[in-house]
Each structure stands twice: as C-alpha cells, then as structure tokens.
Length: 343
Image (cartoon, rainbow, N blue to C red; front, side):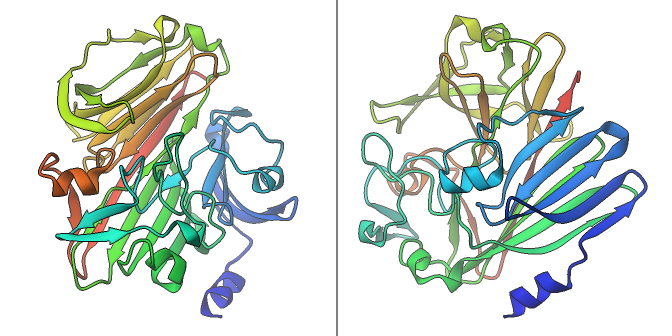
C-alpha cells in the first residue's frame, strides 16, 4: 500500500527551463516521458514493462530499435529490443546452478521465471519484462529531467528462490546535456556479500544509412575466447578488428574486456552512419562490453556488463578474478550514457 500511496502523490508533470518530466498513459500503459525542448530530445519509459526505455527520440527519430507501434503491443508480445535490464545475472550460466561465497545455489526451473538460450542454458536473469517495478519519482529542473523506479527483490519469493540475496534495485533515467544517463544502484540488505553480474542489452539503430554502411568503434584491448556454448574459456586475445570496423565486413557477437578509458575514467563505443552517430559510454564498474550486430538486422547492441558471461561459476573455478560484490549493508552504483549526434 505504501508504494501505491507514493505513486498517487506524484505530480503528473514537472517542468523547468527546457526540461520536463510527465506521467501519462499510452494505450493503457503507464509511461513517463522526459523531454529537452532545446535539443528536441524525448525519452519514454514503461515502468510496468521491465522499467524499459522504449523510445529515445532525437528530432523525431527513435534511436532505439523498437519494432512495435505502442508499449501495449510490446507488452502483449515482449521480445528483446529497446533497453532490457539483465539481473541478477547477464548472459549465460553454464548450469542450472551457480556459486556464490563458496556455496552452490540451485536454480528451480519449475518456478517458470527462467529464460533459456538455444542450448537450454539460463540466460539474462529474471527481470527482463517484469511488471513489478515501482515508479518512485520523476521531476525536472533547470539542468535535467529524470525518472526513478525501484525493484524490491526480497518481496517476491519466486525471485528469492533463484537468487537468495535480499536487495533493492534503483534505476534512474536522466536526460541532460543532450545525452541519456542510465544509473543503477544495488543495495545489499543481506548478511553476506552479494555478487554483481548485472548488465543491459540496448538495441540501437541509425536512420541515415543502411546497416552495411555503418562503422563501429570498439574501445577495448581484449577479445574473450568463447566455447561452442558462447561461454568464456578464460583465454583472451588482442582485439583484431580495424578501427573503425565496417559492418559490411561481417557481424559481431563478441565479448570484450580491458576497456580503454579516457581521462574521465570511462570507455566509449560508437556506431556511425553518414552523419548520425550513437555513442555509448561505460562507467568504470562496467568492465565488460558485449557487442552484438547480426547479419541482415538493422540494429547494433553495445551492452554494458558488470562481469563476463558465467561470472559466478568462473569466479568460483578461479578462472575469473574480477567479480565484483556488494558488502552487507553496502551499495553498488554505476551508470552508462547514450549520446546521439548528427541528427
């Protein structure tokens, strides 16, 4: 009841200078819309569909791949597009079990909340299109417009049965200075450290040229070697792609580490057409990048990851040394930024 009361107290719109934030209904789906009038940018977020931003419009063009006419149509037949959130793990686990803090936890397929890949491996966590997010704030001031939603993981037994760490997830979309920040905070309320292997799977598209004319910048030194199940083997090799890499030369479905950071401590990937460019900037705690650009599909995914694929089990095996964790009572927080230009 408290969450409902908070939602009812929120205003329907706030506006300051060029920025505005408003809550509305689109075909019966609650949507929060952030806008920057001076840059003709708009962000539309559906809290009840995985808290996903499904539109980032620049001069009327959606830079996200979203093959639906409305969020209601998307909710009827959800599929990966726009900006899915992957938690409590991103990518694949190599078994219906994983290790954390020296203990082996079993996944329960009978609960019906596991997603599987083509090899029947658990993939992309539990929250992809969840309706269980609560919108807790949206506002605008002279500098930005933002919307914050929260997922209280411990409230749902079917979630805790798969990942028994009491925690809350707070996600904020912030539109400022011509870019969209996606901030994620994990608060660990458990008595043990909570491993962190979350990620995002944003789908981007350019409007000024076909996919085979796009060029890609990969800001990484290391290219991870995968086995036939797309699980890292522990080996890596130097990135061998030219810079920029023309997509007409092939496809990408690759995992990168050793990200190359600028003076601000962030790594920047981008895709460019004739004039349009979309850059995705990774905060320092996103240490891994998956880049996915399949043949004959008009999108590319720059995926910020807090860990490599199968991180829990590879860390336990001693293969992966960089697994992050949140101490009891602590918080993990990081952002990535989406910056369009040339529109």
